[in-house]
Image 1 (cartoon, rainbow, N blue to C red):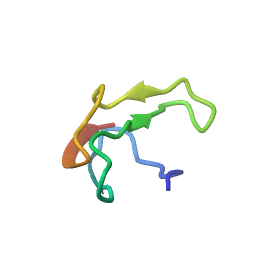
Image 2 (image 1 turned 60 degrees about the vertical axis):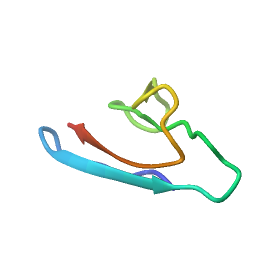
Image 3 (image 1 turned 30 degrees about the vertical axis):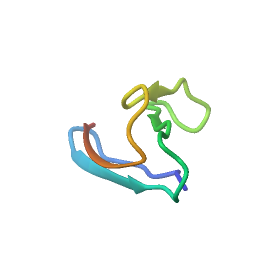
Length: 55
């Protein structure tokens, strides 16, 4: 997945869920495009959750 583009000053919800046996995931975003740099939303979010990000 990935490649989503959000408008500046908008709020988006990111929802994820993994398969059995995966306890943590790493979700990052970049404000400069596909090549990064990348910033982690949280260091080690649980395998299923919802987070809001602000553009």
